[in-house]
Amino acid sequence: MIVVMEQGCSQEQIEQITAHIEGKPGLSAHLSSGTERTIIGVIGPASPDFRNELEQMPGVNEVVPISKPYKLAGRDMHPDDTIIKVGDVSIGGDEVVVIAGPCSIETEEQLMSTAVAVKNSGARILRGGAFKPRSSPYAFRGLGVEGLKLLSKAGKETGLPVCTEVMTSEDVDVVAEYSDIVQIGARNVQNFMLLDTVGKLKQPILLKRGFATTYEEWLLSAEYIMAGGNPNVILCERGIRTFETYTRNILDVAAVPSIKRLSHLPIIADPSHGTGRWHLVPTMALSSVAAGAHGLIIEVHPNPDRALSDGPQSLTFENFDKMMHGVRAVANAVGTHVASATS
Image 1 (tube, rainbow, N blue to C red):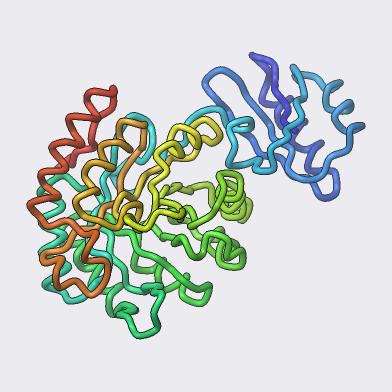
Image 2 (image 1 turned 180 degrees about the vertical axis):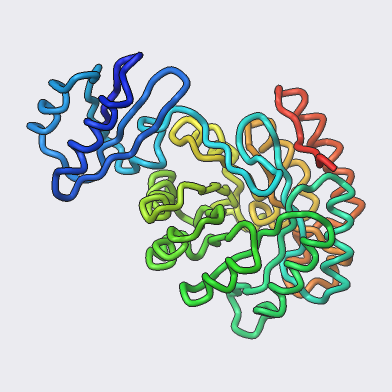
């Protein structure tokens, strides 16, 4: 349930409500001060009688039950959009932030050339995989810690924050040491032990949707991270698996406006994994921006034909630059804009 405070309520009244909630075993309070109202969320199992208690307290306008199981990730308790800061980059609001880079970090030369190219074309965050989950045990599975060090170096030399995936709870600390955004991939969206672990981090978490994850299941995974103490979750629609075989996945563009209605968290789209075919990536990127996505994550490689992973869905430098021109045009047309570097 949520406690909606009266307009003009005092700080003392807010503190009294909070203390009253947290004085009950198994309950905690979550304060959200919006532009028009102050809301105190009741986290945990609360009885109907407790609702009556709260309604009688000074400064309370109403107590509203919440039927949705995701309390922290939902809009009921947090009506205003969340904007997440990563260095000088803001994800959320009316900016479209582009994250780009290779699927896998292969060599320092490959990574650095890509980092420079995507930055020059307008990307604000560099992505690159050091630990790679692969369907085949014989496929290239990343450089591990060596890759993390190369990614961190490339980020510092270009001035771009970096994003990379963590696969196990044991690797969380080392991945967090070298990255600005920690990614949870589609295969781990319901790895609840891993979600609990990254919930203890301070860095933003990029949470990808699973192959067959419903919106509610996806938001409940975000809830795990937020309940662990980390409110900085960025959701990423990366396509779901259907009966169609032409594309790798089906990018659910409808997830963008749907999640924006259900949740206050930023949502970005991944048309690279969402299609699996490079020639479809620009079109689906523009569609995602038109649907209201706060950002895009795009795979780019200097020579996709020789990429050690996901070459068929990776853009060349030239194609990425061309796509960015279209992204800016669509963003302007729908009343947003592509985030640009401040320096």
